[in-house]
Image (cartoon, rainbow, N blue to C red):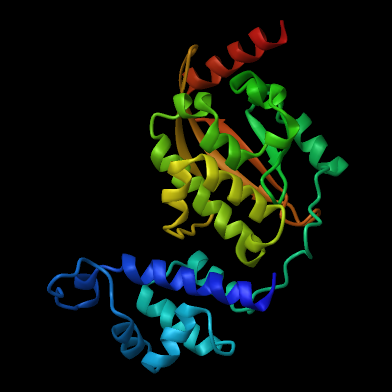
Length: 277
C-alpha cells in the first residue's frame, strides 16, 4: 500500500469518526444547524494540534503524524483498543503486514487436523482476504451453499452481503452484517488498498447498497465471542461464535460455532446425520 493511499485511508477514518461523535458526551453544546459530530477546529483544540495540521490529516496531506498526536486524537475520539490500533496501523506504526497480494489459501496440516476434531461443530477456516478455504461437515450441513458456490465467490464477506440464504438465516442480519464488515476492516488494516482486498470491496460496493452504507461508516471492531441465533428449517439454533488466529500462515483464522443449549446441540447432530445420508 502506497504512502499516499494510506494517508487517504487515515483521513477517511478520521472524518468518519469525527462525524459520529456525540457532542454531549464530550461536554460540548449543540451547534445551531448542525447535528452531532465535532468541527475540525474542536478536534484540533482538544487534541492539542493546530487546525491546519488536523485538516491536513483528514485531507491525506502533510508528513507522517507522530504517535503522540495520534494517541491524543484517539483519546478525543474515545476509540476502542482495536480502533486505536487500526488508527496507528494506518500511519505506519503497527507491525508490518504480509506483502502485496500474497495470501495463503491452503491450510497447513495442523489446521486440518484441528478441523477433523471439530466435525460435529459448525466451523470453517478463512484466509486473510476472508476466502473460506476449509470447513467441517457440520458447517456444510448448516450452510450447504459453501460447497456449491463458485470458488471465486466462496468469500465470507461476499456471501454475507450477496447470498439471500444467509440473510434468511440471520434474523438480525443488518446488525450482523455490519459487525462482520467492521471485523474485516480491522483485519485488513492498511492492506485494504491492496489486491485482492480492494477488488473484493470494489465488487461489493457495486452490487450491495447495504455494503455501501456500512462501508462509509468506517467501523472497526475486534473479534470477541458473539451469540448468534440462526433460523433453520430444522429449528432455531442458539450458537456462540468464536474466532482464533493462527500464527502460521499469518492472518488465517478458524471460526467455530458452539451450541449454547442441549437442544441446539441435538439439532446440529440431526443436521449432520441427514447431511451424511
